[in-house]
Amino acid sequence: MSSKDEQYTQGAHEWTERSYADARAYLAHRAELVQTLGIPLASGDEVLDLACGDGGLGELVLARGLRYRGVDSTPEMVAEARARLGDRAPIELGDLNDYVPPSPVAATTVFRAIYYARDRRAFFRHVAGYTDGKLVFDLSPRRYRLDDVLDDLNVAGYRDVALRPFFVPQTISLPHLVTSAATALERSGPLARLVLRYRFTYFVAASR
Image (cartoon, rainbow, N blue to C red; front, top):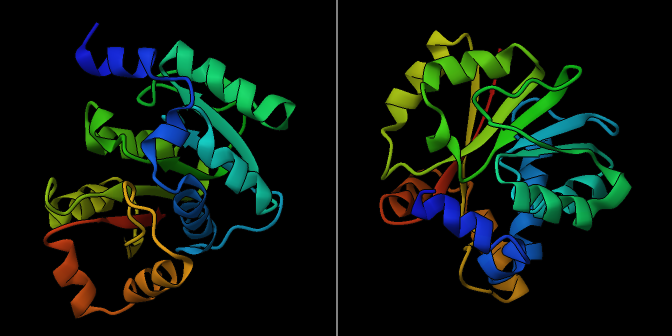
């Protein structure tokens, strides 16, 4: 077992609460962008969350009137997600490279896990096979060249790509007014791109 696998296995209990300084603010903003960035999702649309962890995002997705399905490769995380969400959402054990849902979904999300794709272009094509609407994921521009990822999306058939900086911090809890200012800064164009040189991530919504 790798150190990363061991981290997820041993740390599954209350993973969300320990991973985010203000889990609700962080995941609520993530859920908002899942619904609104790129092709908008309507009430009742299903979101497939690959590498879902303990299902923390699921609560906020469900609160927006969407359906949620979670998949994770760690049994302990699957157990925690099932305990968190109960009968409100199906949670399955599976590898994001191979998993196929029982029916097409409106959106597929992959957060903090795109690096688990064995072959990024092949992964994008795989997801396109069961996703009617959009693929949504986060991307650090300091870890990956944005142009490379956009090229992979294009080769995989994604013609429409919406980008949005994501400035709600993971490890710092901010007052509500400061959080509001941070999300407003996401729309600031050149200033937002300057901030991304040093911290934070892009939110990417790609559709065919």
